[in-house]
Image (cartoon, rainbow, N blue to C red):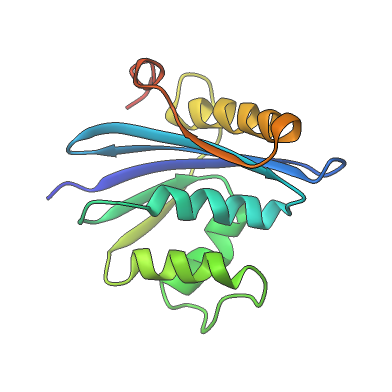
Length: 155
């Protein structure tokens, strides 16, 4: 069984307290992606909301998470890999979703940087677009169109 590869990124504007997130998943069934965002949100909650959305309806199998998010590479990784006993006290609703989705699943976390022509750059562009859309129109979540996903480079 091949590993599911997941690229996730979030974007937050502190002055407006608005955040956006996006992810791209590569599974045996192909590529899928979703972008979303919300107002009055912290950077940590933005990253957790994006990661929780990425884990919804995930097929079985090992998971490789590619991200540059300090919250995913720090506290989330530590809790999932059992290096920390408990998640932080804030955003427990999202922590519960993440822990449930990853229960019994082998997961690795890979630090990546945003560089041109990579899935991470694609997710970063969609996260910024989602942040701006949330600022203008409020909370939303929407699939990334298949023709756009077909243009993801670096897979």
